[in-house]
Length: 264
Image 1 (cartoon, helix red, strand yellow):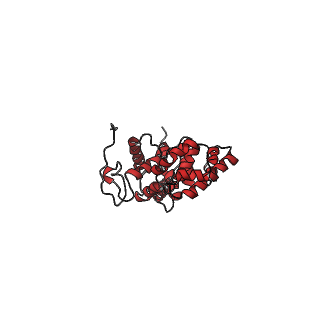
Image 2 (cartoon, rainbow, N blue to C red):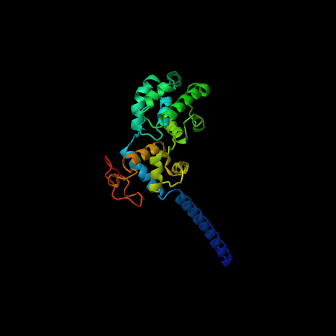
Image 3 (cartoon, rainbow, N blue to C red):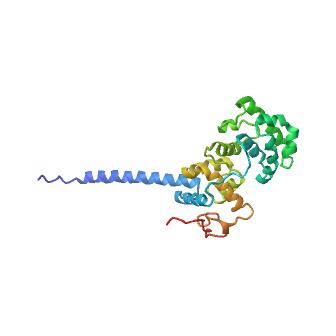
């Protein structure tokens, strides 16, 4: 049996050096990944997954609270909801949508009669102009149908990025992140996706939320902000993520029990 030739010290050095370079490159890559993630959120991937797992148990099928009967009435309802409550908008649109649930019916109703239905909503005159104008555009440019893309939706008068995202999600089942005041507050307060603008918060949330939770994520965040992590006084004692939350001013760090049996 032939005895293997012992490796020279030079060969050993080369192998050791190559291994060191590979390990160094891997460490640099891991470090860069951690730095990128730190710039997006204060949470680990496991923490984010656990946050949305709990939200999914509390509200398995979250729904938007604006009442509507089709994509057109959803566009109108969301446009009317700017600087107004969903409750107030629903109160006004219940009767409105009985008589004007298509762009043509809205045009037939006319601006002055529309104002009569939405007078209780803030900025009702400007919103009435936008609703009539977007109805005209839908008929003229889209055959009376609500378009499905963000770019097209944002060409409608009174429709911004948030409204477009809501319509894409609720009307067409396209995963989006509608950043309203609640989501913007949570993104910054919880350090989940801190940003100076809604667009920055939206971009970060879309990048950190696990794909299998993304479709319902904006509703979970909106509802959590509306009913638990409130603007004036967060109700930390009622929070299901109190132990994970990184809000420096939180008043509880023990989460409330989740409903139903839990794994493990």
